Image (cartoon, rainbow, N blue to C red; front, side, top):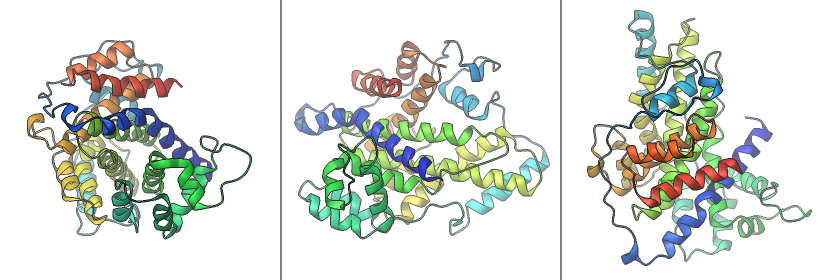
Length: 363
């Protein structure tokens, strides 16, 4: 990933952090008794949406769900089932063997952040001072470098004087900025996928990951009464799992000198991405509740049986998909809200999250 792409990635996360920062802060300041009770409704199948499609999808037939429309946007073709051709089945088997190996392939897995567990704990501890956080960040050169680069970006820099100390950068960015920094450090080595086919897939997946992580963070604070940063990390981990499966699969197709099948790729992603995300979380020594939330990311698990973080992740992925479709004109504002309600999220807090994302998109 180029320096410019990395900078845009960091600033993009910073903008999204600001998109729901006020909502999250308000939820944290709200007395515990006043927080909405966590009782999500079971999610029925999304109703068909009917807005005019975006130009990129004009040749595709009308989609019947948010997931289908997102698939058609990412792959550029109508959704089809996985190919039954023996060659495609052989590629799929090779991908499963590669990604189900006891140790994740270092070519696809992101580096293990040395200080991630301590950083997560420190950011969520109100008693940890900025100076203590600075000392912790200084121990990881990659995170420290990204911190200074982010602090010197046009989004944060307040004057012509460069930000040269970690202490000053921490004070300038605040908690939301530090969270965005950590997110960027996690994502940067992985979101560099390139393929001869489906060149739009990494960009659409990155947007979905950004919006999904931000929506999961806000839902955790506003609805699930849970840890917002954990919700954000879960959304990012699902993005990591998705892009890892895509990269591994397209590489296997290239080795086989075979044109990739979009249906087979989508099937592999749906089956493997949540488990890959969970294995990354396990390797990073994240909490058991985060591992449980990733294990619950399965349509077979009813909404009413999800843990608070599991519900935050499910909402984030769904709301993030709607936000991506709104951004390219597949859904307008009314269509986005209607899709959100059809997915079982007919409550003001959920709609506020989507509206805030849409406003930041427009800005």
